[in-house]
Length: 511
Picture 1: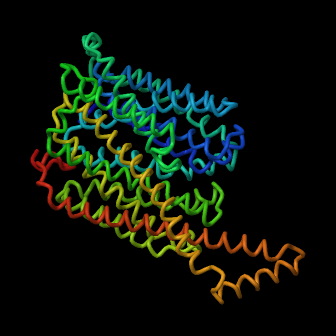
Picture 2 (picture 1 turned 60 degrees about the vertical axis):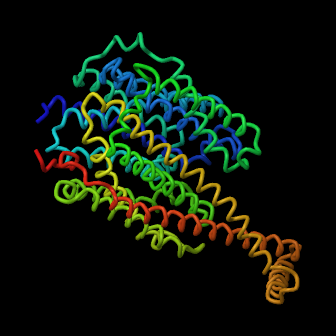
Picture 3 (picture 1 turned 90 degrees about the horizontal axis):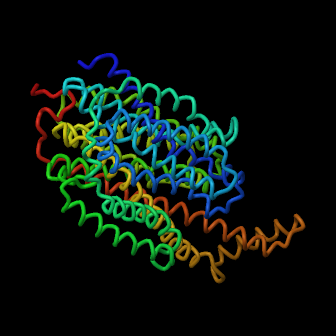
């Protein structure tokens, strides 16, 4: 059993990770308020989120090397301090450019905290304690982005958007002090500095940063038809070639890919990738539907999405308990089938759906996330030797984030193209020559004329808006169909996996 000092240090690390992951999504329900405060356009404001994600996705795999070089204590304390300072700077931003720079700093420095927690959990706790530890880090990693819009909606509604960042300052100071004074898991390997691969770092930054940019901007700007997306696609390819060439030939690569030789880790990372789609994709879809179709504000969206977080919180202990007693593959299978059931329910979506209709899909999403996350964590990281854990933890967390980025890009592309497709199909029925459409238009025009408006013009505009509205709802249904197929097929893959060793289970039945 670890000492009390180590347990307190670990809890401080978990809280630091919670803040870093929460800040990805905390702004998502409040972008309109930040946009107004900074005087940015609707197209530009998404960079408040994108800049954070790009910077974080570069740091996460790098953190394994830095943790070995500096020690967990130094890396985590510096990350927590830098994250706290960058959060305070975000609250002082007066222009979009400043905000983007500060958010990138916040994401890059905060990214160092996330993999350190996963590595520490599997380093300092024996397998017999993993039934408690794994659900805890799984809960934090999934709950933080899920409740981000809820927390952000409440904060910006009750105070102002500046407090989305200021709330990090006091906890951040405590986490920094706790990390510096209590963490003693490992010693720094100073000799690694002489072997630091600067070209590998440049290649990785170009590859992952450009990948995140292309996935974020591609759907909105017709992919390679847009000049900036095209240029970053070339940078992505060149960066990938440099990165993989260095990683596969260096004695001390910037990221050690050998962990993928472990079958359990490779499959666990694949499942983590898809879990990222479920986690970030659905956290994105629900607020977009409620804002765009239902006209909800940030507070109403937050209140409507609270259920998923509550379902996760209540399922976490159950997931830990089951992981010690059942085959991990069976738990994952149930989790992915639960995901599929929730998204299948959403294929009956209409423009009138609100909290009550979304209740069951959200409960299924929250429960399924935890039932998938705990076995995936144990499966991927539970069988690796301690010297591989730091690098592997970075890679494992990276797969979840990249999965989320790929998922969002696919979801946005499907929403845009299918909305256009459904609009053109619906427009074929709502046209001149269709008696019902003409009659409806004439009724609407008479009503608007009676109010002293230009009846025909207003009626046409209203009819166009109605068709657009319905086409948007149908495009959401298409996305939920795709997600249903994805999660149902993963349930089958879970069955095909080889049974992991006993030590990979939460309680390690073989110990």
